[in-house]
Image (cartoon, rainbow, N blue to C red):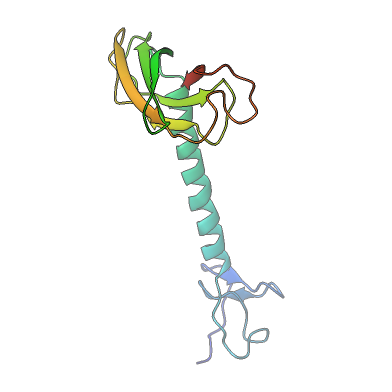
Length: 163
């Protein structure tokens, strides 16, 4: 299949190697691609980049909008109590208060002795209405000292962080 001559006054791509005009969707001219090996054209490459940039900006604006949502106050967690179970695990009760003006959910991390360690648990809460408190019971696995491995924490001391 031979290609017809292309003029620059009609839509065209250009050869990656020599810059000669080529038909739309053709990345190399006949002289630089005698075997007619297919590859992406300049239009396809630039289109892919444009889609990626637009998608990135949309994602950025969604994340920024979530961060500056008015009324999304803080979520205040408190360890209400804990009990060691017969299997060595520790059951812990966490109370999370939504101090904001809109309902929100939280991602919470419970650590032994206030130090991040292998026995920590992470959980997500359901929506907590504005100004209300919800109680969550979780079980920390057995096998680590109560203060965490090498943490120096007091037995039975826990910290919880929610955001």
